[in-house]
Image (cartoon, rainbow, N blue to C red; front, side, top):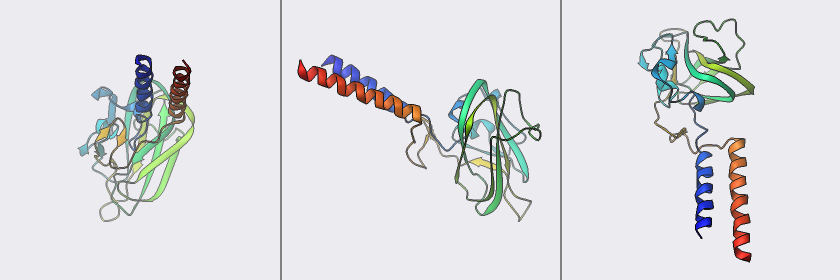
Length: 200
């Protein structure tokens, strides 16, 4: 019985891991870093750190602005999710960049991993998927309209609290493929163990 409890506990850990890799905020690889690892060209509300940790960042200005995270080591990404912070019904644009060198305002010469352009809704989650790409610096460049009465200040996030990278305002996490594999392995192990204990 103690062995069965151990297997059940291990399976519970595996299942818990499946809920830690998805959220409509930029990337779990860029979370919980030192404050100095986050930067933005300007900030009028929230912070660059908050944008990468389930909160929000507001540039306090129109046109194009950027927010960046130094992940401190090279990470390989395949997906980035961004919550639109601009007001509903305006044309916005987003560009996702990944580089081994700091990007900041020097993104013009880089090729974005993914882009978005069009009318968006405040709180809308944009999911950018791309081929596996490695880099240390993750940057989101965002365009938020054209001026007073014609758009919205550049903003990311919606301020919803983060819980293990599941945004409770959006819904349950969607496990990544490796998480499914871990879960399947755990279930297979549990079934095999129960068969052995049943026969003995």
